[in-house]
Length: 269
Image (cartoon, rainbow, N blue to C red):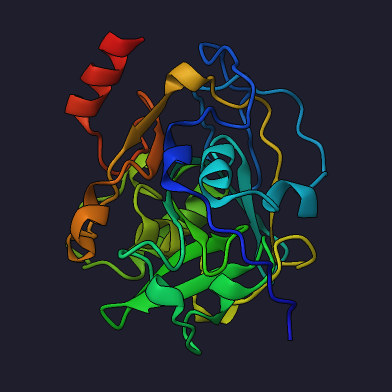
């Protein structure tokens, strides 16, 4: 059994605290990433340096939930398929779920079940759950009892042809072909595109050989991050409106753009 994490609930006022990453110029160009079955991808949101084989370790994941949700932006999710092909996508949207005090969290009130056990495991543990009986959502545990971060959208970088095949297999034959930016622009969509299912629940991103995260070339600057309400949590009462969703301003792969909040934050800047 994987070790439990220490109790450490992040106070809500930390929402407004500065992210743990350093500001960076997001106006650069992205070096094209190609593999045997991929189409080239470009991005104006990040400046890409030569990728190394390093992966994010324990120290990175061992952060309070809100900090981790912000720090994920710009990092790279990797899934190595059984045949050796690797899928890569840059995280561009996340949501923080703070544990017991958060009425929108699966662990509200400190409730621990067989389904949400990964939320109580050490930071960096995957929590994968099923919705509507057919779709999956992927979360990563953080500091804080029962706290985890939902990976909401990715910018696909490598293995796009494979992602299209995986997405198409679960769509109607008459459906229009997906554009690149539509492959991972939602929590269940990214799980389909990356072939993530319930078998990934409780996997350790620090040590697992099939799924991990790599450091992105540049973190988005504070001014490029939009802080808004989470999506689809109306059952959470007042918590439904808490600003616990974070995304890259202007990135086409973001699932839902909050124009009102962007306008307000832009005026404040």
